[in-house]
Image (cartoon, rainbow, N blue to C red; front, side, top):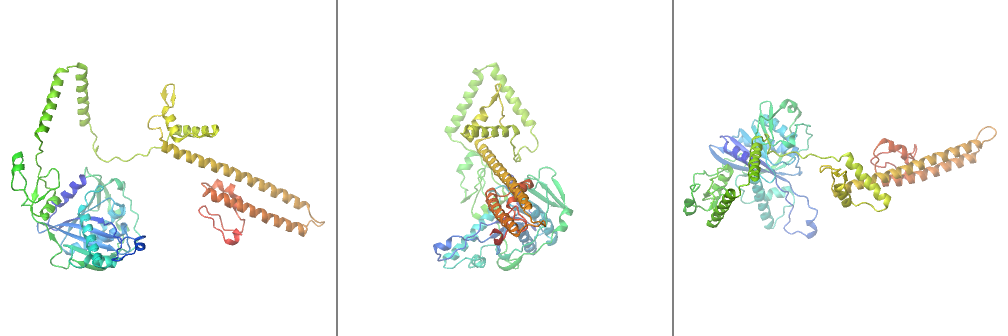
Length: 552
């Protein structure tokens, strides 16, 4: 509702030479062939295109235009959006547009610090002032762009039905621009260059929905310019941007170079029929026309669909009186009479005092409402308390001891009913549901299994060290009169060491594959048995880097 009011306000306040632009990425078009085998249908990659719907004040009349950018490299990120805005403002400047309002949904390509900051730089570079940038709620405020997207797709489908193909971006462009052109629509086949964008930080960007560009920076609000807003200086990001213009490969349709056809002038609203505010004129008037406003509270009607569209854009609705049937009115009066009788006959002091106290409390709450109470609140992440964690671990251990594991549902029930001296042990915000308990059980089991395996590896490592120490001591005792080892003993030791090292490597590899990545540096002391000393590259915590020779 708030975003719709901002949209109507922007259009109604447009002065001569000002425009309001709605941005939206159209749903990707799947490539189509006139004759297509079933196997060709699967694994398709959609064709990306961007819609910009413009409403402008041209000589005191509201006009509209739509620009379609077909993106050959299918980019839908902030870089592509910045290049499209840069190109579109340059095209509108050729038609005399000096100031614009921007509007889009909350997609990441639009509602990001980089895009919002880049718009300030684009405005100064192109010479078209950007007054404000507003974001609409989900599924609201961008119906004009969605309507244009549907028209483009229908035209391409008709092209395919005529016996041709639309498999690539070039064919999609050809299909959209063939035959009779869409009214007041320009098409551009573009390639959005990949560029490295600076890291710009705007505080609480996800909570802000309205931005106004002022001298030396911008101001941000949560909703509908409520309050003074927060000022962000342009000095923190202005010098970071080096804009790369978008590459236009082809263009067609109604272009700025055309003297006629670029704008579609909407009709004036002088022919709207709004019945007077009384029941008789509402139902007996003979001036009702063919097209009715879809707004529930509005009773306006029009001769043409263009008049209805202009009326809907400006939001100047005619409120009509609510009507009821005789039966509804009789029931309402009967209910009032019953309430009146009850208030006279049931004169119980306690009840009357309670009702008065309740009414007084409600009125006090309305007077003491905190400023901004209707704004969306941020979801608070609740962490489990240490008391709750210890209780769940105790239940897990209890199941192991008795040989019958405690189910998550049983644990949830026991946690709810747990009492100490007649008082509940866990408050409502401390208790965990069965899904959370099942997840915690799984983590506990994984940690216990890992500890068991690590203990086994440490024990094996110590045993291996002891065996090597004994072998070394025994080999030192075997020497000739000059203190040198016999050749056979040295060969036996080398062969024994290689065999032992190979066994340690195979066992360590199997354990490593079961466990995956280790969490801290202390774990490496326990997995030394899976290192091939001096004969392999350093061990990596992400992947096992070794050659086929090392594995052999």
